[in-house]
Image (tube, rainbow, N blue to C red; front, side):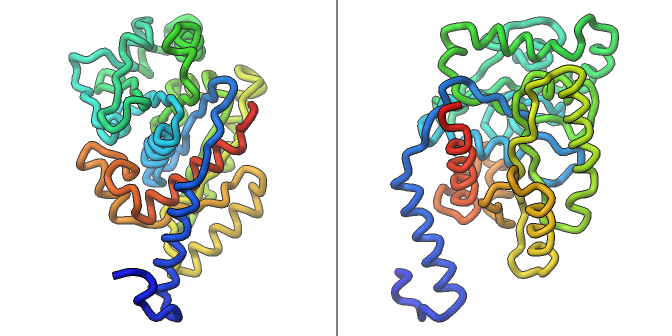
Length: 297
């Protein structure tokens, strides 16, 4: 059944027509590639806001558009590794080996079965103890940064356009390592009550890291997630976030979506699982915005 067969005055028909137009626009879009590698930390210490989902789907969308992308799974839960179809049992080289043992990133890198341009440094449960191990290490805040800098100087690393670091939902040493290693922070904010709670603290942490450890760090991107168009609260949250962070907040908004939620159980992102679904289209639009914002950078 085509969109034209619906009564164009109905909300469903309008929604379908809008989605069809957005897909058409995406299909004709040329996405610019950055002149140098852009490194994002995806962070929010509040759980359940779509942090990992955002990291893997933005990464997958950019890879679909032709970029070479690396996801570093710095969360001991390993959800990003799972969503990208990567084994992350105790026998594989992981980000734990990189940060704690000094292993080269290239040795731990695995290609996602979803897209050869999308690679992952997986997490394992060993990472759960890394916070304690890092405390006594020299240069403990810089270990990930040094590993990434070394990797980017290799032939494989020099071809990488984007690195996304998926952080644990806390502000411990692993997250600090991510902030020190990155130039940009991407914060997903859920369109629900208390959405801005904790973000002020996170922004304060970013400013502290910037002043003490990484002067190039900037909160560049905020993405609104889990938007339910039927509720007044969701619309109010969108308005509040855009008022507080007008330059950083993307125009694209990620809706609540069954497809987005289902995809990780199949070891896929929603980009690979159902590319034409509303959630996938929204993540592709967000990826285009992020790419265009960094054009020429």
